[in-house]
Length: 277
Ligand SMILES: [Zn+2]
Image 1 (cartoon, protein in one colour):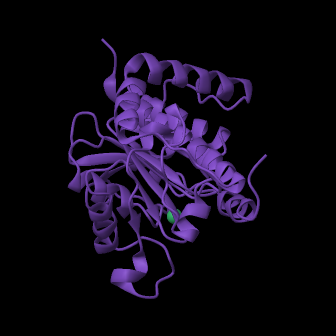
Image 2 (tube, rainbow, N blue to C red):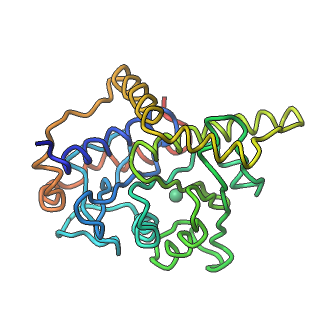
């Protein structure tokens, strides 16, 4: 009988490596998954550049983004993005927050994202959220529960929200759907910028977007894309080892004994100015 939790946690680390390998995540950004047996909890790696995250780095948090077990290391300051979206959206089981440079021009300019090719249809309607509107001048990080809740309200019933002058947050009913939407959402934005530079954008009609998105989000498509991205992760030598059940399922307690290596912070800061690889 498959160990659902171990499978889910391994898939979460693979998902994180995929998004790093596909240049959506760099030193920053994070992916989480709702606990497959307890919808009031979720798993997310500790504060670390996503490509470096291991099974043993996974931490179990409540939807208030509090660790289930005591921990000694640092967590992502923006973890409330995940917890507050899981609270607001019972249909969401996986979340990614990123600052991909393909998406940032839209977050900076306020230009609306539209689906511009068939695979890009999975972004759906993408609303904006401006932290400044409710919270005035901040350090731009979403760290307070009320800030996360405000972002979740802006997301509403949609699957992607653009955060002005900051990045984007993407949701999925599961990890593979999330990764499909995040990667092709990033591609959609890259192509949209290029098409806008040519002066004309002929986007999908609302009907086309709806039909295409429903078709692409079926398992035959999401699994095919997943297998392709996994192969690319393998080629890059980034595939995590399986079998981290002990370390990951007891994540809080197990990882607490191991302090975060200082190099993690250093490499994160170093990688900020440029995309990795
Ligand atoms: Zn951020």
